[in-house]
Structure formats: C-alpha cells, structure tokens
Image 1 (cartoon, rainbow, N blue to C red):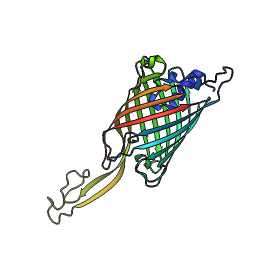
Image 2: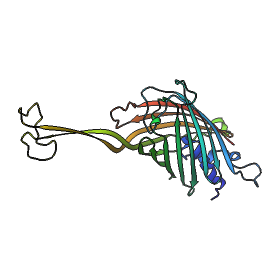
Image 3: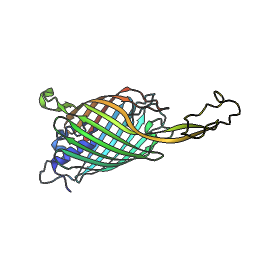
Image 4: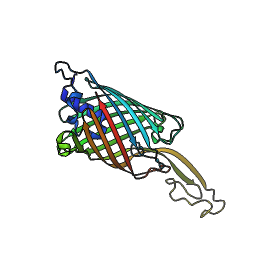
Length: 303
C-alpha cells in the first residue's frame, strides 16, 4: 500500500524522532517529504542523526556507574512504510571504538488519521566487555500502536527480547505536544513534548524452598508443622531438611519515567535537548538500578 504525503510525515516522525512519540508528526518540513516538482513524488527518505547523553537505560534498568555516550544513526524510510536503520554507540569511558551497534528493520503505517502502527525487529551487537545493561540480550521484536484522542497522545509498545534469555516488556506512554510558535516570530517550529511512561516486564530470579520432614511429623504440607533441626528438634528425631532452588519468572511494573524534551525544527534539521527522570521499582537482588536524571541532545537531518 502506498502512503499519502500526510501519512509519510507522521511515519518519519515515528522513526527518526522518537521523543515526539507521534505527538507532532505534521511539523516536519514539507520539502523533506515531497520534491519541489509536485509531479514527482519521492520514493524514500534518509535521516542522519547524532546523539550524546550522560547515561543509558534499558526498559527502566540502568547501571550504578554512569556511562556517558555518543551515538550516530542512519535511517531509510520507503514510501510503502518499510524502513531500516543502523545505530552505533561509543561510551566515553571504554577503550573500544564501538561499544554497541543496533540493526533494525520494520514496517510503519497509519491505519487512520488518529492511529499509527510500527512493527520492528532489532539485532544488538556488543563490543567485548561492554558494561551496558542491554548486553544481556541480542534480539528484540516490537509492536507499537499510538492513538491521538485529543487530550493526550497515547502509545503502547510490546517487546519480546530473546537471546541468552527471553523476556516480555510493555511500555505505556502519554504525551502532548505543546507548540511555542511565538518564539522566533513563528519562523521556526519549536515546542515542548512532555511524556509520562510506565514500563512493565518479566523478571527472572532464583527462589529457594526449604522442606523439613521427619521428627515425628506424619505428613502435611512442606514447611508446616515441622521442627527446625538442631534447634527445637531433639537429638535423634530423624529430621531431614531438603533445599530446592528454581527459576521463577514474574511480570511486574519495572519503571516510572518523566521526560521533558524541547523539539525544534530548522528547515530539514530537527534538534532535541531533553531531560528525563527515571524511577526503577520492584528491583530484585543484584539489580543496582537507581532513580536518576538523564540529559541528552539529539540532532537529525532528513532528506
């Protein structure tokens, strides 16, 4: 299915300006979508992007030590909605040249003027000894739907992460683009795009069960009505303690987040400084994630 000019504007906003979260798709410059010759429609669009940030996170989880990074990306969107992208990351405090490279392909479309959908697959390639939390996985499939219902712009994403382990994550986000057109006398588009999101997902951990049998007990449920050996049980009572460990998976809320980006368009350029505050919850043993602030700056050019 071929996409109209209006739909393509929204899809480019979805793929190359994630902070917009579909909130302001019509703000991209028209000359980035259609050539000056109105009888000739472009077949596709390229976007080159760069980003710097003071730390990274993965579905609400982060490292106790901050790892500032720089990233470069290249995205191609065909007018049919098919797209592909590559993004490479370099941590400032590591010896390697590239610490992570993400390869992604997908399909994005607008079901109606108010509903957009994006399906994707990503492959993560990490450098040796990378400290990134994300390094625990290598593949991800995602499906995202977004609805503009007037008061808010709501997006819901479901992701299946697989590789050495496998997990399911969901992200519910609500945002609303607030234009600040009076700045620069309306010559350039600028606005705020505040967003609140909640992340939930599966957690895997080891759970240990101890069962005591014998000592005069005649059955019953494990761990109930049994005396603790060596403490209350008399010598020679014949008590036997059995310990078993199993892997348990539970689906819980993992993170609450507030993001405050400033979105600016300057011709075919988009600039986005952003502040983000993340609060991880329901942490398990060994998880060093902590509530912290993230600062980032992103610039991209579409042609």
